[in-house]
Amino acid sequence: MNEVSTATTLANSGDVLFLMLGAVMVFAMHAGFAFLEVGTVRKKNQVNAFVKILTDWSVSTVVYFLIGFPIAYGISFLKPVKELLGNNQGYDITHFFFLLCFAACIPAIISGGIAERAKFWPQVTAGALFAAFSYPIFESLIWGKNASLLQDIFKQVGGAEFHDYAGSVVVHSIGGWLALPAVLILGPRMGRYLGKKSHPIPVSNIPFLALGSWILAIGWFGFNVMSAGHLEKISGLVAVNSLLAMVGGVLAALVASKNDPGFVHNGALAGLIAVCAGSDIMHPLAAFATGAIASLIFVYGFHIEQEKLKIDDVLGVWPLHGVIGSWGGVAAGIFGQEALGGLGGVTFLSQLMGTAAAIVFALVNGFLVYGILAKTVGIRLDPEAEFAGADISIHNIGAYPEDHIR
Image 1 (cartoon, rainbow, N blue to C red):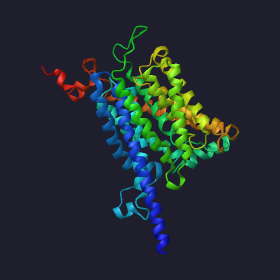
Image 2: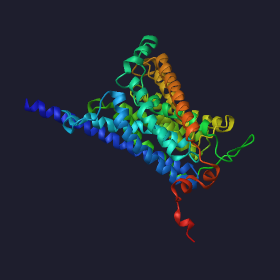
Image 3: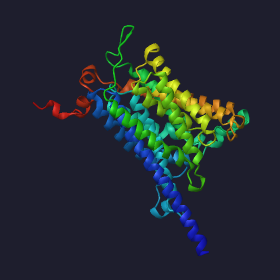
Image 4: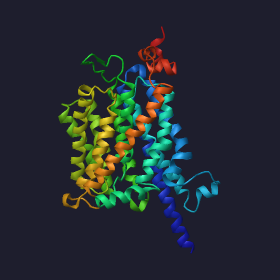
């Protein structure tokens, strides 16, 4: 009996450690989001980017703890500590930490699209609403306590449940499609488009942008691999598929963009976003192809968004997370098939249905939340504040204060 108890305790402890390490790796990815944005925006908006990401993380932690996680999984933490620990070394509360890192990605993704002209507190409010309600509701329908409501429909109509192992759709597609209404309602930055002519604003710091991409890429292995949830379910296939998809994204962007460093570093992220959904069922060569296609979608999609549609999405979060996250959901239904070397258990129709459901859900939520905020408190800085930059107008200090010392 003692040996059984010891073995169970060790197994539970191993699971808690496994999830905690994954949570820390994904938490570190938020530094990647910050540096990616800081390296892209102009110097007068760099402080704002750092403060936004950290504030959104902090607010997301509180609302997801109190509201979001209970909505998604039916587990409340408003109970004595002995009950929080339970008989599994506090697995549930560690699971909260891990999944919080996913939920907090939503405002972090949106942040890059609305950079340089959004008011601070309205965006924090929007991020809080998404982390507390919008994201957990969809999470509950795919991964959580209400999964049978939607998954049963997919299974009956499409022949299989919707498969999203690590969140190509649940996290990235939702985040990217939520960002689109915000970007459209805000409108372009001052001077970005004059008449019918486009005036691209160059990135401010390639080393910071590259650092952000590297931090994200490293943390992504916690994002994908630790989505197993339990140490005994860990899969080396997920790690290798993540690697191959990332490399496929880099190489495709290198060729398609003719060595553009911004596209190359975002190409790595495109591959990683796309492979999340099917990383546990694809063959590594299929993962490479998935990442390469995702990168091409970003290179050409960013150009279409910015130059043809004239949508001033600063970091290109709609094509990068929204469209490519959707591609990842569909790709799992293609390359996950046994006929293409996958493990099977998926169908193209179910993946298409689940992906479409996420797009509709995100667009409705995005237009509703940002529409209400725009009509009430406003979501855009006034022209003088935007011209001065968010750093001075919101935080009263620039990224390089010594430049103002004479």
